[in-house]
Image 1: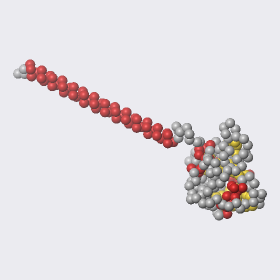
Image 2 (image 1 turned 30 degrees about the vertical axis):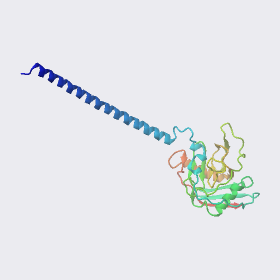
Image 3 (image 1 turned 90 degrees about the vertical axis):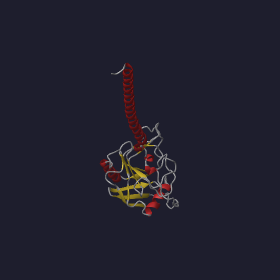
Image 4 (image 1 turned 45 degrees about the vertical axis):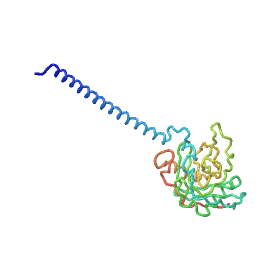
Length: 260
């Protein structure tokens, strides 16, 4: 027979065991809740990191479509070499003929207004610098250009020296947005966005494009060349975006500068 004292001890033990079970259950529930919250925080953190890396929250990031200086093409990393000595006649006329896989593109260069640029291009072309190089960038919104002149075909190449900016006021006064129109047919220097940072990369404008007056305009493409560019643009970029490698590869098979 169970005494009253034994009964009280049994009830107390059962009560203690129930309390322990409830506490264990509460701890387990708390751990599950913490795990869920931790996972959610991790997902949010990962998402935020992805957005920041992607530039969604980067208010200082330039618009890659609206500025030739916003791409890797603006950061040439070649070995350093001396700039060429002046060897052109600034009073003469020079033409840059590009034999490309997409068709012939020719443009006259303004040696009188851009002697340093024309001198550099003639020196490079005479050495075959542009031969068998790809035009690595096409933009189809905001600005409308095909960018060439990088022997690496990546947007990171250059001749190892820089040339000064020239002729920057020729396209008129900048508007309230700090831009001028680079007309269709214009050839201008790409750069890093910093003064005097042009190398060998240049862009060919196939449709009027608003840009900061920071890129040396030094040539004018003939009508046939503009049509070639328009056909390249119609095919778009390789990834279907607004800024990237052209879908139809454009390779400069031969680049020749001649004096007229």
